[in-house]
Figure 1 (cartoon, one colour):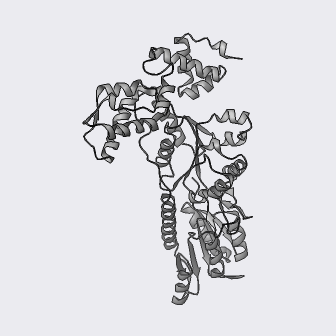
Figure 2 (figure 1 turned 180 degrees about the vertical axis):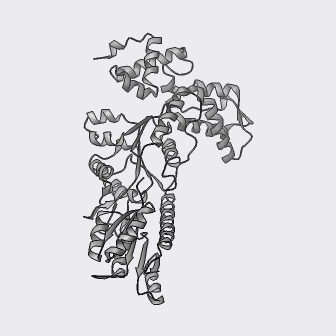
Figure 3 (figure 1 turned 135 degrees about the horizontal axis):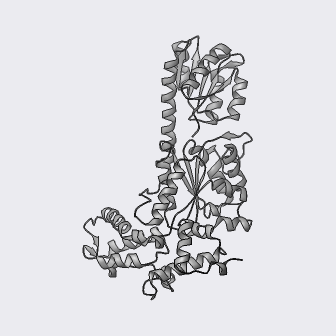
Length: 454
């Protein structure tokens, strides 16, 4: 995460140098300006987190600029410095929106305290703005002991050490959103906002306004300036779910934000600077979409700095009992039935089902069971799997199909290898297992790899 950036506006070079040197020694990044006009230019090029400005400048006073700064960013902290302090001027400055008012020569430790408090208040406001949006539940994404979930935990630990974008791939309902929130809450930006948006089914116009914001009058109905989610997530995490459905016309704008950390609101000509940790997720094969020209290759490579594949539930069956008990405890508490528990035959039924809807389907099945069960113990008869999904799941691979677990595993490996034309690296990624493990299983099941290759 980048340093907090301070714009220092002071016309005396010696004073400016002393304050800048002090700010940089306290870990801030400092930009300088010696006049109102220079300050406007620097402000347009950068996105300062706070402004320290001398009241009297060669081309006007600080109050002339204060309105413009707050017009561009109402939450921007502005600290005024003056050698002509008076109570009337201090009261006026605060009324105009200044964060604080200090007399010169300024005591630098006092300035540091004022800035630290102002920036903390700003962070709190950003978090509140992010919390105003609906949040997703954030359970532990690594429940279980299966090799697949342990491999996922290792990949997530690698992602925590990186500031590059993370691409989470996995089937619908497998827990991609849960993992995204875990990455935020355990990363360097955990004290900053977490903002999420599901891109599926959104029109290009709505998606552009939602992500980048717009200026007043940018289009019919734009009666006021609006911040986009990139701005709301500044310094924090932006989670774009179902990015595979992202409109191709907007993909270059997202690429520009990731590469240059700059964007433009709709209806504006000036760039704005932003610093976000991007986590994207999809249930699509983005490489296939790139080949088909439906997703930009440069954007794909940019968002997949750290690729993570969330395994489907059918590939971690040994984790199902523990997951089911944990979900049941939460659901039973929420539904006012804390005494319910799963019987042995119910656990067996849950573990042998193939879960085409993954964790989301598991939760739904358990919620229905809690509502339907008349006794404290939930039995297999109380479980109601979705008919369409259950039929698809049981067709040649589900419970009662007559196949052993080894046979089901071989069939799944052969199916994925066939779809990937024998490319083991791609197949291992989709299966959520290391490449070495897949080679071992190919050998165990005597799979003829050559027949899948071109």
